Image 1 (cartoon, rainbow, N blue to C red):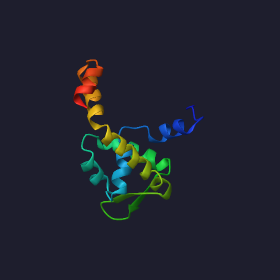
Image 2: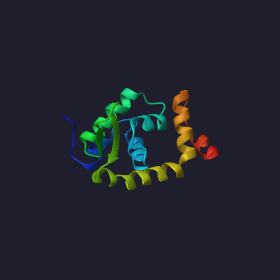
Image 3: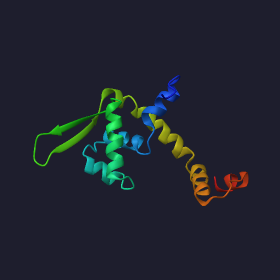
Image 4: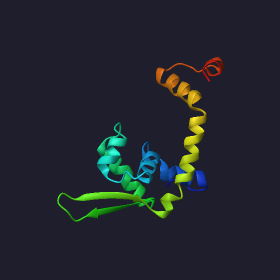
Length: 125
């Protein structure tokens, strides 16, 4: 059973998943079909995107419409509950934009397996 004692635990449980925040953002921008979302997030497999879309639907952040045509047409849209999360995602994106250089250095150092020094951060930021 997950720990659900505070808001951070709850949001972590709902948004945990590499692509969920981007899926919400792109759906909000009007990319509603699975193929459009796949093009917007090419690094994600179709299977993983489908799993994360299903979880977002289960948490009532998005809704899924299946049109009765051949082949079936599926579209996703934000629920009112999901729309209320978009300003929060926007603020997170602004924070990352503001700290872009520092974050990029930290991430690349981790990937390369080397330690980040204070000098690295001062010289590159």
